[in-house]
Image (cartoon, rainbow, N blue to C red; front, top):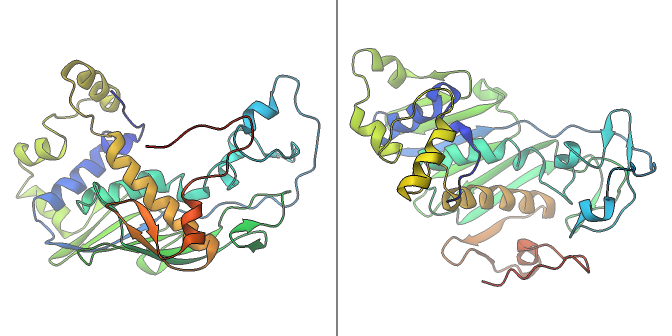
Length: 296
């Protein structure tokens, strides 16, 4: 059994579970547009080359990524925790907070078993890029600002932004349906449909449907769900298949802003179409000695 550690599906005051249940119960109609704000990556300025710490095998840590000098200073580094601000090892806020909020967005839109058909957007980076590759290796290089539009076959649109100040939030998810809208993040769940829960609460049946036949209990609901699924052999609430789809959307968003052009994605074959250069970004170049056969 494989469970992804996106506890938003189980915990966080059950904000996200209730949001998805409200949508699944038809309380705001058909979802037309969802806006996700996840923040932009920080900048570092130049980070000096220093000796590799004695306890760190830098070559092994880099793995498939290109071999480069170890850098650290002024609380910045090219290694643990800060790895997320380097495209060589991660994807900035797009694959950090995006791993959580894009997952919830596609779950709520009932598009978590598929993917967009087009991805287009713009981003700002702290270093210059050529053909999607950062031209400096001495500082953080993931996007500090971005707006990406992901459109699905049914006409739904998912917007991924660093901030949504014009909509009144800098972190969270705004679902817009044909009959209303709701907003959710880790601190609140708001909207007319939420206010109406006092007089018309969600049924036990809809909560069970959303949570795959189970009802989360207590502060360790995510862990509990994993143990239950080990016993029952059912898929956990955060299964690998839907989360693969969410992360694919995040990676496509990064490819689009790095290359500066729209992408056409086939969610059935799971390949970029009509752009061989962009399609080459579907898998990384593997450094000699660290090759892994990923042929399916």
